Length: 225
Image (cartoon, rainbow, N blue to C red):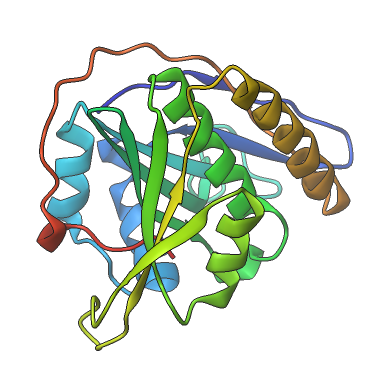
């Protein structure tokens, strides 16, 4: 899995957000969040495959529990996972396979922050476009993606195990020079929204990896929600 170095900033009255790649030691929290926010998208082995895949980026969004020490000595983890996002890099396309936010923290701009981070990583990896599938009934997620410029290009009927259909969304021109300006505008907009809820936006550092090509198996991937 590609590694993304990150750093964060802390304010006196604000809550600190930490954005970093997920590690093997995080999987207990990842699985708990997966059950809560995604209804069991992947099992432990599925997430391990993402960790071992050099063409996959699996990001976690974390906070430090109030009053907790750096080492989690108060009986809680030193960092609490409240969101995750995953992207596959396939040739020149970024396939966003999952975005999840703990229901207790939804509608505060955190999903926008994760999507922004995934698109920033995709741009740095030289991807030309981004795509995803999302449940046609997940209007909140569709609104989020459309806000970032994604357009519907088709529908996969009965794509999910419950019979729901999936909307296929694409975002082009990631490699265009003008997209840098677009990312900066989104970063400002997302940052302002987070600050309204007393979150301090994390800072994502550049990453560089060499990416092999691989083919996507639609039977092993689920749409982002």
